[in-house]
Amino acid sequence: MQVHDGIVAAIGNTPLIKLRRASEATGCTILGKAEFMNPGQSVKDRAALFIIEDAVARGDLKPGGVIVEGTAGNTGIGLTMVARALGFRTVIVIPETQSQEKKDTLRAYGAELVEVPAVPYANPNNYVKVSGRLAAELAEREPNGAVWANQFDNTANRNGHIRTTGPEIWEQTGGRIDGFVSAVGTGGTLAGIAMALKARRKDITIALADPPGAALYSFYTTGVLKAEGSSITEGIGQGRITKNLDGAPIDVAFQIPDGEAVGMVFDLIAHEGLCLGGSSGVNVAGAIRLARELGPGKTIVTILCDYGTRYQSRLFNPEFLRSKNLPVPEWLIRPPRQDI
Ligand code: PMP
Image (cartoon, rainbow, N blue to C red; front, side, top):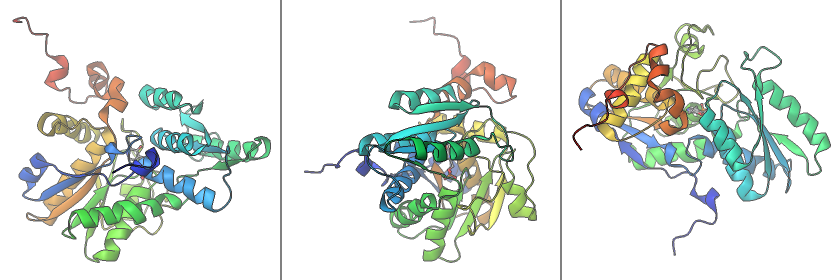
């Protein structure tokens, strides 16, 4: 029998998919790691599992205990899925600007949701800080205790990628990989995979793909943390060097405007049949930029983070797209057929 012992065992070992159009356009082999195929439907399932396993191993999380986290959504979904499967509960603090789809999914899984205004990290009411305070309070009040997942600065997050995603990519490419590129939310994905790959091949090129409004493109090109502009992408765009990002071996950085990222989301649907979220658009656009920099014949891997359906009301809403001066694909605005 080939059976997973519960949903948690189905996390990871995702396929690596050749993106044919991007590969043809660059003369490189561009591959996407299909993290949207995890059971919680995003790359964050891995971090959720490692954070929970680590808290249990340290003796901080006990049966029936509460996991508290501030999240743009996907980590909360991963944490709640794993918590349900393993006998814990979750309290999720989310900025109210995040998509309705992610909030609805969290509610469906039974997370206790706390919506807070979206304010910068420096503000004490920022969602990450609120979640930290709430965890400390609940640790006192809850009968089975509570822990703070703290995905930004808890390096169990990137360890998950050092131990699983990085080695999987190495095995799946047979070690024939010249570059890896990813956007950053916590930095766990980029740093963890970069560390795992550099340990196996020193001269691999690691690239950051950053959306506008984040400070990391500026940091890795000029040494100064500086953010300008804004982005409709969710789950990415960091303003500081988190503990997960600290020490990440990043060689090059690209800034990907929303028009390029969203255009890529629509290209991936039209030519690959892949319906993915905005951060995947940033990643594939970054992979194309890296391919152009490294030249033809190279193999470049990036992350396909989550499904586009998680952002239906924005990414596939012509009115919203027009309001942001973003491209609208013809299939969203074509009139119904009259000839059938
Ligand atoms: N894409 C999406 C859709 C995400 O939710 C996240 C995580 N917030 C990321 C990318 C970035 O992953 P990481 O936190 O590992 O940097």
